[in-house]
Image (cartoon, rainbow, N blue to C red):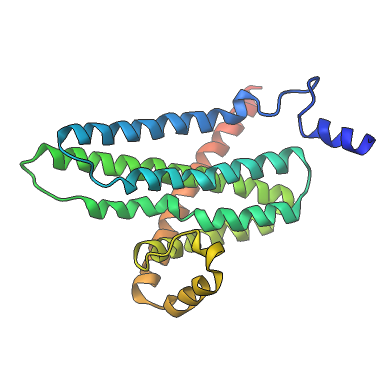
Amino acid sequence: MKRSLSWWQRAGLSIANPPLFALESIYPLLMLAVLSLLAFAFHFIRIQFSEAVDFSLDWNLLLSWIPLLIAFLARYLSKNMGPLPWVIGMLSVVWLAFFPNAPYMITDLVHLSVNYESDRTWHDAIMLFYYAQISLINGLVSLYWFHGAWNRTYSKRVGTILLFLSFPLGGLGVYLGRILRINSWDLFHKPGQFFLNVFENLYDRTALLLIVEFGLLLGTLYAMLWGLLKFRARRQNRVS
């Protein structure tokens, strides 16, 4: 009984303690939700011009929320529940299966049809870039949260290794989705076929191109995000 009560209080579920999720902790989710709704507004404007570009844009943006929400859960557990290596490990596998959906939306730029005399061309260019930008931010924030969860659960060395592995694996996931048309659910629905396709195409030239270049892109953008957040944290510590 005492052990259960202790767990309840450490989880932040007690009325006497702070609430389960303080506003500060969910603020990034609320902000990203507003930005996602603005993306849908761009698409709604496009429909008023003529017709929808491709409703898979909206679906792909929603898919980029899956790794974000999984990372939010991992961040909460690692901060409030103490070391849970098996739980964080399982969440990491599920997160990695859906993480490539975030940078994947960059490849949706192939839907752009160019006609310099049409206003729709410029609207579509901005809209597609906006979708890709928000989706990519979702992925980078989820990676930042998981990086912290790995550091707290295992060690900084393990966290760094998993971080650097995430970059090329994200590129591999984009290749599997865009070129081979394999989705994240196949890892759980058809695991044998999924890994067979991975091994058969791992040395494909396009696969290597996307693994390397998406890996560099994710690594560069993550380094910028990490640096900005660390600089902000140090500045706040100096002020306080």
